[in-house]
Length: 220
Image (cartoon, one colour):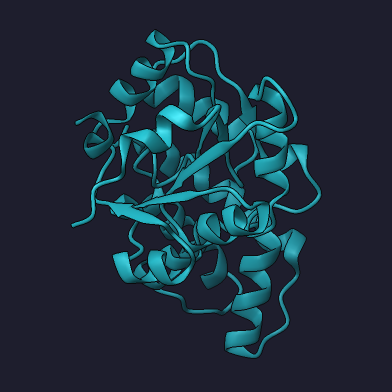
């Protein structure tokens, strides 16, 4: 296993974290919500397969599912059902191993960090308060951009919130191929973490420079 070099973080001006599957254990919960939302429209997509879609924008998920199943899906209707299902699933969310401590380390060292997530701001703030016990954060959510991941807009937005200068360097830490693709498009080094369900190979193939099993490896 290749160890993420510490100099990568020392030389960076800031770090951008994904949320679902990286800091909070919500991939399976969102997958169940997607599975239920699609089932209500006649599309059978088991939660394990739906998990591969978590992290992408709603538009991307609906488009991919519609193409794969050769059906017409109303994005707005599907999204409304998906958000409704999330109300029953997100209260079960918990922080992932090392998540609380890694953010405390960055806070203690006054090292700038932010979160960039395809979730809505309301969902993200709920998860941050419930799981990570944070009372302040820099957040770029789906509500802040026209296109969510795998487009780089969220990462650029997050970077503007925390970089001391427009020429600063950010590292991205995330769990999905969508995170890796967004980081690649934004020309930011990407560290993949396998806590969200994506395999090491999938993350490397998507452009990850390093892959770790959990955030505890960064603490070590």
